[in-house]
Image (cartoon, rainbow, N blue to C red):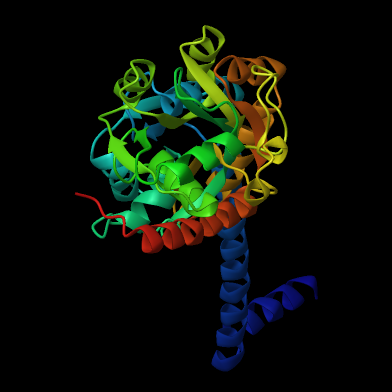
Length: 355
C-alpha cells in the first residue's frame, strides 16, 4: 500500500493540470521578484544614506573672487581652516580674481552641481555688482543657495586731519556752506563703499564729489596725504591712523560705539536727525550654486554655524576687525534682497554707472 501511495503521488505531480502548474509558477516568480526588488531597494537606500552621511568625502573648493590678503580672503581662509578640521577633508581656497568679483562668481556657477564648490562673497559682489553692471552674468537671488553670513565689520567716516570739522553735524554744516567743494575717496566706481557714500550724501542732503582710486591702499594714502577730504572706511585698517592723528574719525556707522575707537560717537549719537536708526555694515557670507544636493547644503550650513561658535575663530575674526555673526540662509537671502533694493534706489537717484 505504501508503495502504491508513493506511485499515486508521483503520478499526481506528473499529471497536474497545465493551468494550475502555470499559476503556481507565476506566483513563485512574483514572490521571488518582490523579494529581489525589496532587497535591491533596501541596498540602494542604504548606499544613498551612507553616501550622504559621509559628505564631504573629498576636498571642498572655496572660491574667493578677490585678491589674496584682502578682508574677504582673510575671513575665508580662517573659515576654510576650521571647516577642514570640522569635516576632516581639505577645504581649498582658490582666488579667482577680476571684473569686480564676476570672474570668481561665474566660475562657481560653472562648477559641477555636486556640493563641492562654494563661493565667498561680500556686498560689493552680490548686492552692488548686479545693480551697477548690466553684464554681471548672475542673479544672486535666483542662481544661488545661501549658506549664511559669518562676519561683519563697521564703517568709519574719516576726514583728512586738517579739515575744519570734528563732528558729523559740523561736516553737514560745512558741506552746505561750501556746496560742491568737498570730495570723498572710494576704492573704485561701483564698489559698496562708493554706493554707501553716495547714499550718505543723499540722506544728509549734501553734495560730495567722488574721487575713485584703484584699491584700498591708494585711497587711504590719498586721505592721509590730504588729497581728498573724507572717506568711508571699514574699521580695522583705519584704527592706527586715527589713533596717531593722521586722520580724524567723525563717527562709526552703527547705533553703538565700537570698542576699538571708544571715543568716536555712533550714528545714533551724531546729533544729525537723519542718521538716527541709520546703519551700514560690510559683511562676509558664503553661497553655492542652486540645485546642489540638499544634504550637501545642509551639512555645509551646519559646519559653518558650528565653527563660527568656536572662541578661537571668533577671536581671530575680531583681530581682523570683524565681528562673528551667525546668520542663516533665510536671513542672508533677506539681507541680499534688502540691499539690492537699497542700492537700486541710490544708483537711480545718483545716476551711477560703471565706466
